[in-house]
Amino acid sequence: MNQTLKVLRIDHWHKNLFVLLGSIAAIEICHQNYSFEQAWFMLLGFFLACLVSSVNYVINEFLDASYDAQHPRKKNRPVVSGSINPQHLFFAASWFLILAVAIAAWLHNWAVSLGLMVLFGSGILYNVEPARFKEVPVLDVLIESLNNPIRFVIGWYATASPVGFPSIILLCLVWMYGSFLMSSKRLAEKRFLGDRADVYRKTYRFYTEPSLKILTFLYATITFLLYTAASLLKSPNMVYAAPAVAIHIVWVFKLTLEKDSVMMDPEHAYRKRLFLLFSFLTLGIIVVLAESSIR
Image 1 (tube, rainbow, N blue to C red):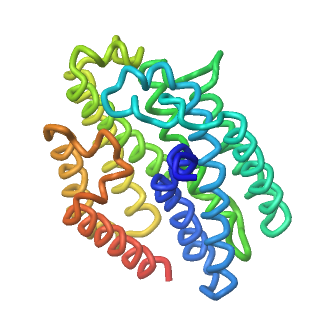
Image 2 (image 1 turned 45 degrees about the horizontal axis):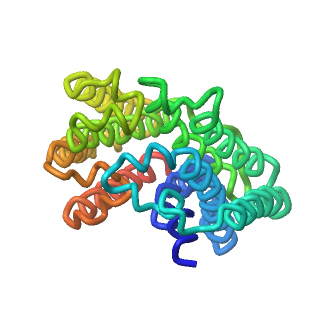
């Protein structure tokens, strides 16, 4: 059971917080009311997205097993070490996907169900031949981080009374922020692996440390510009949180350049308690400022 949980990567489920952010945005922008029913729909949408994410993690771990064997940390993963039954795992993953889509169609609406299928499809494009975008430089980051706006849309429709479609500028914002984090991950990993990086992942034969720094800086700049634009166009009060957003971005970059950086696994950034506290405070301030503008 413990090995199965490792492959399902339950500790990565907090990535799906973008689902909850999408729900909060829908409630605020569409002037819905918070209620027990809203909380139920939001949490259900979050949980269903977590199930589909785990399906993608299973696919990722099996298809990457030969590469993970070359990584000093990932070589001990259950699939690489052969400590788990593949048939049982794929059976469980298949049921996760079927149940998530079916429950969404039954209790939510077709849009949430479709969003979950798109999230699954994104994982297929990223991991499976002939597409396997994780081996295409630049697109590897952009396709992987595309999961964030997909999750945001799922959250938008996972409310009691979904209306319209999220603002494109908000979707681009969460997309570029994800690209910033994924580019930071590759930079940290490239620095950690050194000459072994080319063996572990094909894209590292293209990437260099300077090029990854440039790309990371580019995504960070676009993220900040999109945040400023979203503030001015959608919720003017949000601009007051811009300094905190800038500090958060710089802090991520600082963590990326540390030896044995936690950004090699951004999902585990919670180990940096002060950084985590500051990040959640910043997010809370943004939500409050956005609400004060919209309401």
